[in-house]
Image (cartoon, rainbow, N blue to C red; front, side, top):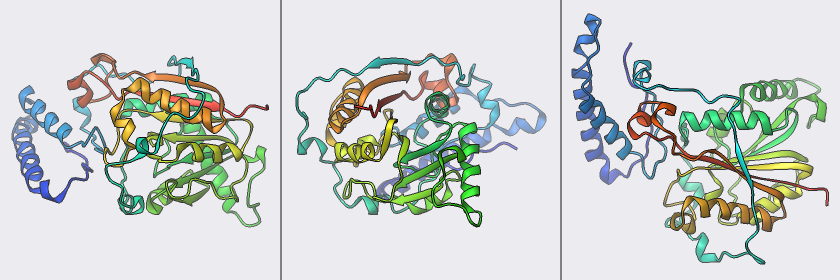
Amino acid sequence: MIGLETICVRYPLSQSHDVITQLCGALTCFVDVLSDAALGHLIVPECIIRSLIMLLHRLRPARTVLSLSLPAFFSTMASTSSPSSNQSISARPYVPRHDSFPYHTADFRRADETADTDFYSSPRFVTHIDDNAIGLLRAYYAKNLPPSGRILDLCSSWISHFPKELEEKAFSAKKQAASPGSEKHMSDDAGLEVIGQGMNAAELAANPILHSTILQDLNTDPNLPNKVAPLDASTCVVSIDYLTQPVRVLSSILEHTRPGGTVHLTVSNRCFPTKVVGRWLRVDEEERLQMVGDYLWFAGWRDIQICTLNDGKSEIGAASGIMDWFSGTTDPVWVVRGAKTNV
């Protein structure tokens, strides 16, 4: 069966009529050219597909929140390749540039200063980076996250992008914890416990690997609850740019982390532009990575590194889907990581 899966996107009501009219028109043309499919042939003029893709890209505010899966036959138009577990990762040390924290209150002001609880009140069951970036992140996690212990997924949602082996361990531990007579917190050798902190209860409840959840607005309360048990690692996917008190948040995580524990902050170029901190929008990608390194450094993390999983400049042959096929690029993805040293 040929069809498009649901397109999930938020748009201002003032623009909804124009957007819907254009989308319906594009989809109508798209369906018309599939008439030969019943005869065993599929002839789709490139201009029609290109127009549709350009429209769909237009509907993605600042490269954000469009969840689109096109039929498998489109994948054959590109020489796609799945990220390999042997994918090389370029890691370079972060070098502190400042004697004191260099950012000011104005750097963390946002275009929309209304309550974040209102903005995130409706669940968004979408992914915020493309499939290629997700695959690369999973491969990175497989090599760099502990296979057992306790992991905090900061700014979590309905999916954590963990590799299959870690998902299975976390889900198994969650089932074990739910059985009668189980301990409140698992011992280190009992499996993998994943704690999810986020802003939307429905999204967190839909994440099958979360052992427990913390519903908390970090911009109003940047400290983790005291009840959070010692952590072995923490993750945060494309969300560090929304935090208005990032050093306090990362300091709190550090306090709850065991010596030798790590933190992994994933960065891309996707964002809700009205909710991201102001300076993030004014600087280039390299400076954003340095900013995140600064956050970690002044929060007390050490052995900080900037890891490039994909710089976003991959050629068409490495694209992961039809949108990438037309643009020739995929979402960039980096991880800025740090460790809690014994000193």
